[in-house]
Image (cartoon, rainbow, N blue to C red; front, side, top):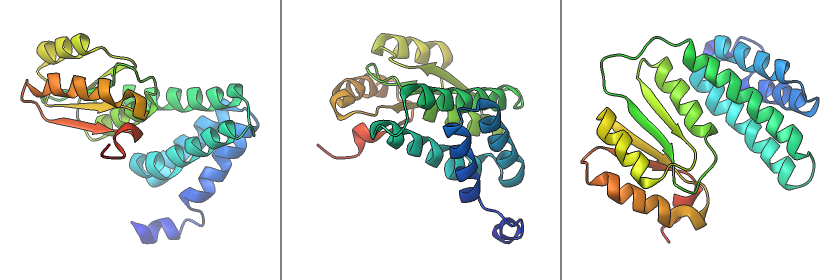
Length: 190
């Protein structure tokens, strides 16, 4: 697989540059075209890990440093979100396996990583349910009871949100379902 990628004459890194150029031009159609071309050439996993996420991190850094405005950042994010939604929607229907619940912590708003995970799971033939941003503990517990999921994935990005996310994980842990957590809120032990 690596050899075939080398023989194509371009790499995912080249595609990141193209996606970033489309972001700077505020061209959502080209952003989605770059992502779709990468998906066909490199596969969904490589596209998400080596093109989409690095490009979005760079746009986020540009925004933090004042190099782009919030409009450009949101346009790029929404173009990526639309492409992921289409990728997920066009995947094969759910299998018989119980779905995997994907959720943000009760104070977290960033869902794009979960949307990417939903697309990757769909591409692998696994069903998931994306509960979205700011999911309160009672809503997640109700979803666990209603769906009997095979696992729960919770994302929390800010250290200040970790305590509320851990409270949710503790409550869901009582259901004896595999729990996974991700995000910068969990990057350190304290």
